[in-house]
Image (cartoon, rainbow, N blue to C red):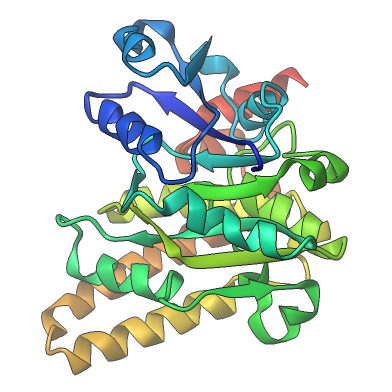
Length: 309
């Protein structure tokens, strides 16, 4: 049986974090370790280490957190055959999450990563529920570099909200990038695909995870997304996101009309506009003054580190 470690970056984890740890310790496929990269020790509850023996926690300062670097450091702490990366707000939908998530990696030696299906929370907004089904359908698939002609940027789609990686291939690829504002999962997946490996979507591996982001929050997220793509043209230059974004808007609009929720259309238009504005500026961040960048980003610490380089 292959060893599996779960790695979770955490910041101010609340009492619900104990529920996540309990769900992971109750999986049908046993987990070896739960490696928690906790930002700021003062926000950590040491009782969790007593209650869950599999938990191994490393504390770091807020200014030291990095989307790529922190996960990269965590991977070095794992000697497992498969590493499952999760976020602290993703909850396994059942006891078979790990088993179903790692199956594509075990069935095909050329599949290097697999990501889970994300189901909406009960409090999820109506339109966001549709977005979940658009991005995470009920059919599993494996995508390869050759699929970029048909799927564009979706070929490299992978989400560290819940994703599994073969350690051997991860090491061959050099791991996550050291310094990432955002999108470290797709940067890695794109690199892997270009080396001939596949990215699996495991629709039967489900986590409950969704957000009701405001227009402003969508703007900041998409700005950082645009920055990440601008900084890695070797991955994203030939597979722009605009086409996929337009397709989502059209599908969402048709869905609202079909279901009779036409009063939600203005909100869709506003949200889409904020998303595109953020992405547009992020792709062109090099032309923006520093104050503008700091206004647009959701990750100011990243830019501080850039200045220190």
